Image 1: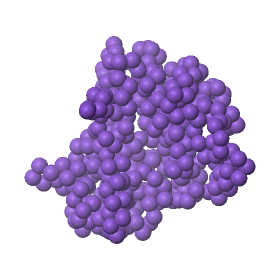
Image 2: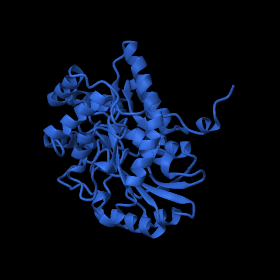
Image 3: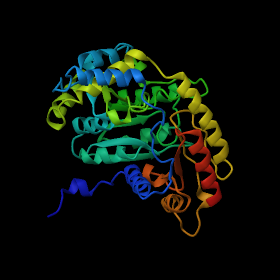
Amino acid sequence: MEVAARIGNIEPSRTTHFANLVAEMHAAGERVINLAIGEPHNPVAPEIISATQEALETGQTRYSAIPGLEPLRSELAAPLPYHQADNIIITNGSKQALFSIFQVICNPGDEVVIPIPCWVSFPEQVKLAGGHPIMVPTVNHQLDLAALETAVGPRCRAILINSPNNPTGAVYPQQDLEQVAALARERNLFVVSDEAYADFMYDNKPFNSLSRLANLADQLIVTGSFSKSFNMTGFRVGYAIGPQAVIRALTDLQSHLAGNVCTFAQHGALAALQYRRGPDRRMVAALQKKRDAAYQLVRNWSACIKPSGAFYLFPDISEKLQNGQTATDLAIKLLTQAKVAVMPGEAFGVDNHLRIAFAVSDEDLATGFERIGNLL
């Protein structure tokens, strides 16, 4: 028996594939430096752990409201100028939020414009909704606004924006975001803005969000996550913010897909917002130092654009590839011979690049780059 064609038409996540390989090597007793996974190495704050434990101890273990706990949604809405709790749904990480968004906005054959390089799941999620991802190359990791406009055809339903960007760390300037918004208004499109890395901005640069534009509120859907900002990757708590009609549709879908997000994990997320509003400046400062150190090291063997946000480097390793070798070939060689895990650029829609995560311990960062340099 064969599985459904829509599953056969998608690519499995290469990030989880490499994570599984690393886990297998660790289980076999091999010491692998993991620079492939986008996960801060910092521990979860004690306040979050305590609130989660208290929720368990007081019986917050039963079904809860499908769109999420009202206090959590209200806390998320508090700093938003044009939204309230009814404009928010809590999801199982922002990955589920994005998957569900395309399910509710795309009809079969609709198109979604996606700048590349992009996160591995974006195009596959569009395909799973019956849509077609239209991949538009960037220029030096920045939006090519003319190319974006050209890519918007009669079947286009949405433009997807991810800033700070995974895998490049690029941050899009406000004027470019405003031009995207103008294009969306002119062509009656949704804008889906993945802001999972909003708290990770370097060099004192401000974070630019499309949510500040009042005249886009009826067309904008923002996704966010507690995974990165609060080191809560295993909690699986994310959210989507958007027009009430879209949130109602997402709630209807979630009622059949997952029901509520883990109730006691949501209490942990609420505590996260209550104990710290805004980015953890010490964590961001530490990551900026890691970025600077990693950037200097990577330039010893490859060209690389310095990232302004997130926690990835995306060097061009064209000159290091030999005899038809791909970035995937090199990533496998680094894993098996140097015992360092990185992600190949092909996973993000472009060739001849590697994604290197620097949100690791200083020791792992130094050792990992030393091993890479020695092999190259």
